[in-house]
Image (spheres, rainbow, N blue to C red):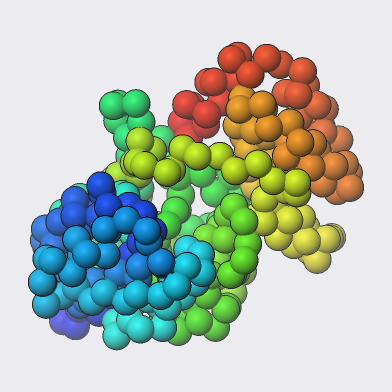
Length: 314
């Protein structure tokens, strides 16, 4: 085990589940195979129409607690698990991703080493089209420490944190309202941002998890008439921090997410959603970004495939 702990941090695991029957057994096996087991594994079934919840129940493992609720969305499921958690810290995991056996161990080391933080993360790999991709890292390999500028680091390495590598201090997460319910696209980013505004963030540049882009239902793109909720939130935040030192780094993060989101939309021919982001960018007066997105709209979808496949590398 890394470090010398007198008192180990108590970490609960929360997994929201919705129609992930082909993956949930493997996901749970990765948690049960940890060098250091979590205090508990809370699976919140959000009204699945497949047999995923039955698979969880059939495991009959004393560490696993299954909660069933009507379909209310992933944020609601995560919040239900967060409220139920007995641990002082909660590590989140998507039902189609998985952890390597060092994940909880690394989180414990971060928590003990950087006690002022309320948000913790590690690195992940991406499994896509049968190939494993290591995304670009915002810090050098094996870095451990406080994140000096969350928004800037996140913009320069979107792999800094996601809903499979994140761990939160429970009381802090509850204090910022948990995950926003009803937000389409990016409610987890909003939650991390709220925590980063009020608390320290700690990161370990060590790969401990796998983001499975080949999972069922994950590749489905919903067409929307408005910009993703995460971008709407960041745009509001930009107006609130006008004239402060944080505006530049928040603007950088907004621009990064907006550009690659638009690239993905244009690739699938979802120009309506891309135009909604373009309008938002115009309202913010980000003219350099406006020109880049306008150019994206003129590029044939087949030529934008690289944006989806390589966006996490840079």
